[in-house]
Image 1 (cartoon, rainbow, N blue to C red):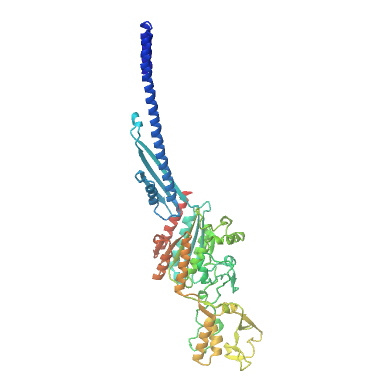
Image 2 (image 1 turned 120 degrees about the vertical axis):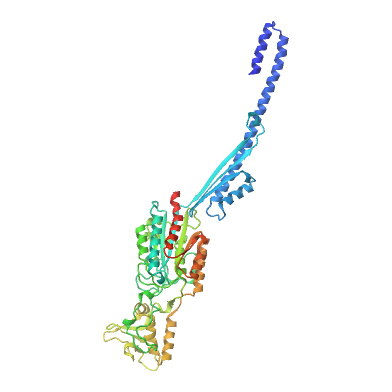
Length: 551
């Protein structure tokens, strides 16, 4: 503008001088040069400004890109590194470590939120001519991964040692756990299944019917399967593999009321009926697998129906617990939905192990350690036995092929042999093995129908008794093999992203060892006594329940 004003004053002066054209020409040449120089400087400054702004934008874009990539990687729930370290590693690799200002990580069991801020200074070449000495390129980024669906299985020890106060504390803790997780689950995000276990796992009739059970007895509410060791190398349980049912039999209780140890005294059938607490898969509706549900009253009723009974087989509880989370069970769940055993809202579960929108959790609890127990050998589970029952008085007799005589039926209550089965005048029915075990203790059968029939002295009767028991039963598994198969299931679960929480509730040393090794980490293991079991369940529920805050 000064140049323009100057040009105007020259024109006026020249007019007063009588239009001295040569003077005007000289003046205008000088001013045009000045104006051109001015325009050149302005254009250079604008070009410099553009360069400074381009440099700024490039810095800002690189910074933002590094932030976005680093926070996304750090927020992934599948990566096991420290989230803040992941962000810093990205900036180190980009040569921008000095620009990272802060990293904030907020995470729970089911989510991870990573927020980072950075700022890079830019020293301008030209903008300082306008009083701008420095350009800062600030950037911030946040990434979060959340879990929308949670599948939980409570694997609970209900063996005999859990009786009394321990069972009372367990019921209170598990009920509180269910209430905490489900009371605000208005969108059906959670499902909870319950697997009670002692020496066996009673599947319930609906679930057991989905497997290829063999040696099937006819005792209702007794639905346990003898999983072969080969199955532990896989996550689930095959629905086509033939799996024997656990015989409904008392293989433990003594023969009867007699104090004699020479097996020569008769004990009536009524004095040696099955002890329900010694049947490895006892008839009950309490210690039965509860299929996935989110109905608080139903789950609490199931928990409150639990009762202490039998030995401890942690490996079976864990195996069936993992199987209820295995994606291969999805078609079976669909069938159970169709039959009404599982609510329609849970159709499509179990989700894939690789599904980033789902979380699978097992809470494994025991107060004991593995205990060896016996099983009925397959040949003596079902099928006709040599034992007959009188239709009239209910007494038993047994056929033993004795080549030297035709009196092949031994009648224990008469201590005599005869040519036909004892019938008391009303006939007799040959017994299926499953019906023999449904009424009589195994030791009674070995004593009264084998030892007394085949032995002639204390020594030979003892031999006959032991031979009969060896024929009828065998060890289900050794403690070392049960420890091994348990850890197989635990490893498969953890390898497939199942979170395993372990609670050793006043357990012995080996029990604590097995549970701690099974847990996902030391932070997932609880060594609890008394009311501490409630604290353990509350801690686990608190972590999982953070999901509700992210919906």
